Image (tube, helix red, strand yellow):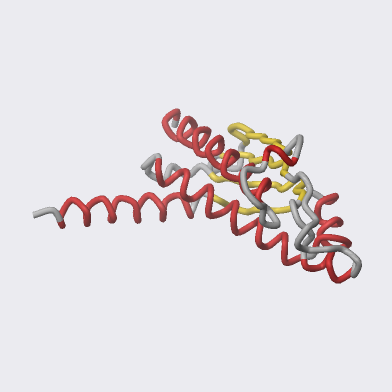
Length: 168
């Protein structure tokens, strides 16, 4: 019967996902990016990025199937640039064309992995911005390049998490 292996792998994934969800302590913004969110991009965009980072890191750690080790992860969004105007930008700049206006985007992110006692174990930094619109393979959404950066960053964070977990 094939159901048992499927249920076991689903249970293992749920366990790993629960373990990884407990490792991400917080996702915050650098002071400069917080100001940019408030003044230009919109607070809602920060929440969107925060949720994507949390989900990406949880998934990346879950794929590595590692047990919770007490290592905590703090993430800071240093910067993020959209490929399209955000809702707030469109409200404050009524002359822009939301359908034809496309730009290069990306993000800069930093994570600090901490031991249960708060000591810094390691830091992970990742920065990626598109150089050209040719880097886009399809019509971009608002945060296409930033989301690509987030996924790459999550993989680096998960690798560091596994290294620190196995060293303990």
